Length: 142
Length: 156
Image 1 (spheres, chains in turn green, orange):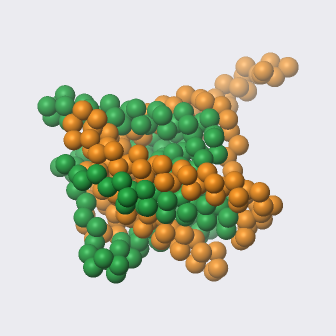
Image 2: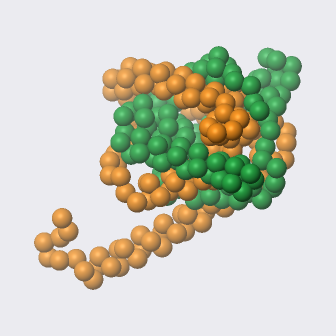
């Protein structure tokens, strides 16, 4: 069980949106995290490498802000096995590369631009995510 | 330098948003997907909050002729719903449903000082590398086929 957190989730979502708008206003770029991670695998001399690395570094540093503000790190709870983390990760990496984006790039930035590709992508990964959790929790794990 | 500081700061805000929203917590993501079990609708509020702000903000920002620190806006131009988009997104959803970490949720979790997020990012980097190789091979194959089969009038 996790607690239903409508206020924090709405507030956090608004901050994500604010950052996406700021990245467009200042740098002219879509805030797609999978694209930034994939871009890191290119040569560090490529034009986009620096801002992508800086953005991701800012994200990695963000728990420190919460630590200072609240006195503790946010707690998370992860799937039970290392194989699920690595295997799930491999599928995520393959999927976002073929699908040109993830929850941030398609789900937030793309839908905000009414991109038909992003709407189709988001509907697709939401449905397969739902089916996968159903299989893992109620069929295999049932 | 200004670009890097600005990008780092925006990434920091993005990351705080992810952490506050609950997206960095796989249990919360997986419970969102678990309609017939321990359903937690919180993530719908994350999407809602992010979409409202981005929808309005993009409309204001994209009226300008250029971003502050670059010469132009880089926006995706593709519009076709091809097999790679749908197939790739389907695979992404399966992986997300197994690990509970999407890339945006995972990156801030790397800063929590725990080992598990590093397993997931390792997997993602392997997956991206494999897919890039596969895409290169597929594109090379399509090109060599096109060389042989291109009619004088071109494809329509």
